[in-house]
Image 1 (cartoon, rainbow, N blue to C red):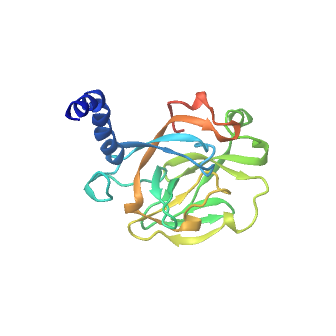
Image 2 (cartoon, rainbow, N blue to C red):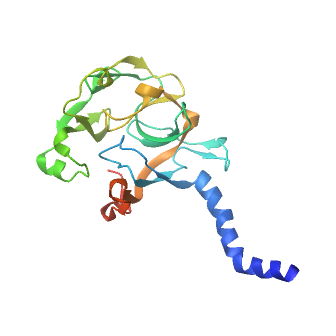
Image 3 (cartoon, one colour):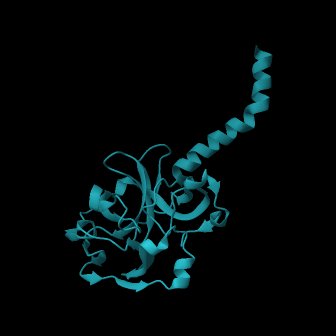
Length: 228
């Protein structure tokens, strides 16, 4: 038995060493997370595997939520990973307002601290490059606000209260999250402001991507690309 255990260790020791290093690495330094929905279209698609920098804001004790060092805080425009406070699922959204900001939405137009976002429609050529099916069903804009910008989309038939939000002050220690796909995102309009302790890191790249609608076919053009 001792001889068998010795051979087993010799054959598998590098595997166990890899696991011993990789698990703490993914817990505290960097990770890759699967995106299950299209709430961040057109920047991030369902089926993307995004790379998350877990050292972007602080350092945590491996396998815990305890922070031991902090050197930064999420900023408006950051794409972050956090726990949904309602059901604990891992979400990816964009920070649109930070603690103390007053955020509102007027007919799908974002307003922060009384400053209205500027919206510039994408050109036909720009829309043609977007990885979105049936783009004729949507309107696409460059949204510029308080030093950050991104491409957002809304349905052409967008109606009702989902594009409305009364002025809301973001409580201390929390952040207001929204998806770039404004008519299809369960974000802070649904789940409320997100506690700073629930934010794990900032997403900055796509490692690889598969298309759920086409039997998990790889989207090779999205492999190893930066987030737009």
